[in-house]
Image 1 (cartoon, rainbow, N blue to C red):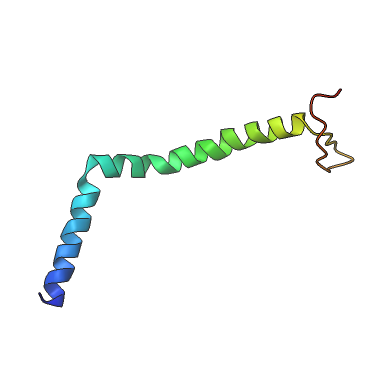
Image 2: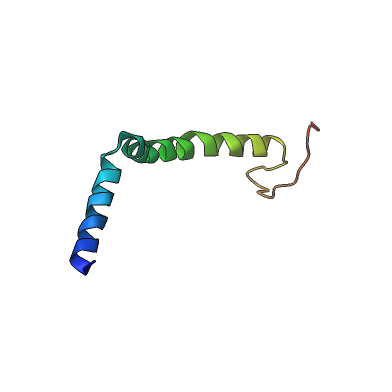
Length: 69
């Protein structure tokens, strides 16, 4: 098989892969899911972490205190 034929086969395979809805749909949704994860999940996790530590504005050290008041 010549190099040109291999390149043509590779292009057709890639084009066919991106034409499939099962691949293209999740690929296009990935940026939106990543954006929501950064915008929602990260602050939620940080709020839970801060709730179980003694962090303050004056003392930004994360010392685990658990459920103590």
